[in-house]
Image (cartoon, rainbow, N blue to C red; front, side):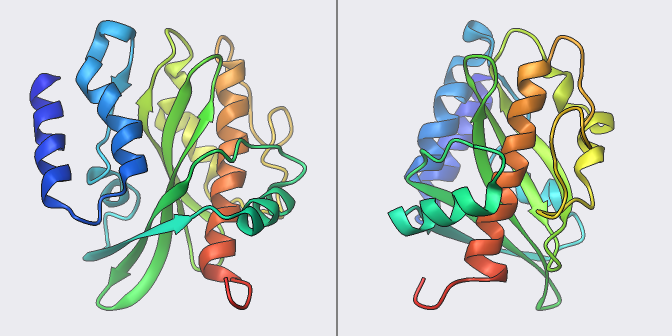
Length: 203
């Protein structure tokens, strides 16, 4: 785990566009390892490639969170009420032979007591392509990182409920984490729609 932290630090030092928010989110997890129960499954560099393995290039962009964006995200994500506390969102434009094949954004939501860090890939049509967990910090409930659970988000858009006990099945012992991810996926879809798919003039 310490070796992973060292690699991440070297990556952060060499990537001028690596957002401070991302470093602050993931570095404590990488540094502390299992001492506080944190499990790190993907680095920021690995995450978009996991979602869009067919892409040959990624363009990383920071989406600053302004009061106007916050209000729009709340409206788009409703009836879910995700946390919108981040100063910015790390997003990625996935390209294959110069064609945009999708977008991805890293978000966080509180599970039981601690944040779950995850990435959501979205197609140009505004549908979820895939979801992956970067870091999980709770002592239980990490079943939500399994592919069998995350696969149910694929194909969903803001037109779907994306809610526990509706179109997202619950996992016994991980109820709050399931709820957090459902909120978080709606938030991620809202971020991509507001920033890329249907940006407001002047935004």
